[in-house]
Amino acid sequence: MLESEDKKSEEQKSEDKFEEVFAGLKVLAEGAFPKECSGCGRVYDTLEDFVENTSPVDSSQGLKEAGGAVKPLIEMSRLCECGTGMTAQCEDRRAHSALGLKRRDLFEHLLSILSEGGMPRGMAKSEILKVMRGEGSNLLSKEQLQRFFS
Image (tube, rainbow, N blue to C red; front, side, top):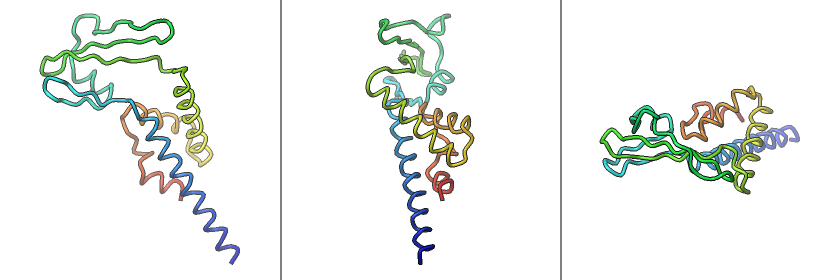
């Protein structure tokens, strides 16, 4: 009987870890792309998609520095396939606000959970970053996480 309870307890711990990682990934992906063209409605799902499927406004690739010293910002001006101008603002990756610090803590926490679960740290980091960029991750899909933590 005790062995059965231990097995249930282990299953619950695995399920709890899965839920924690999955919820964390959803938070980290917030605020990323997609961007929608106001001219034609074309949606660019990721920064990579935006760069690959638009054209530069001029020879500088449409990049310019903006913002102040407190919050460095780079603006990327591009032309949609329909000719409409679009701008993507890329903030300094290391946000120092309370929210930015919470996101970094969450990133480290998820990285630890995945590493302790047996995923190589470099792979876990790469997959979490994919999710944050809005690219998605086959390894961190709900189905794969359920298998990983079962």
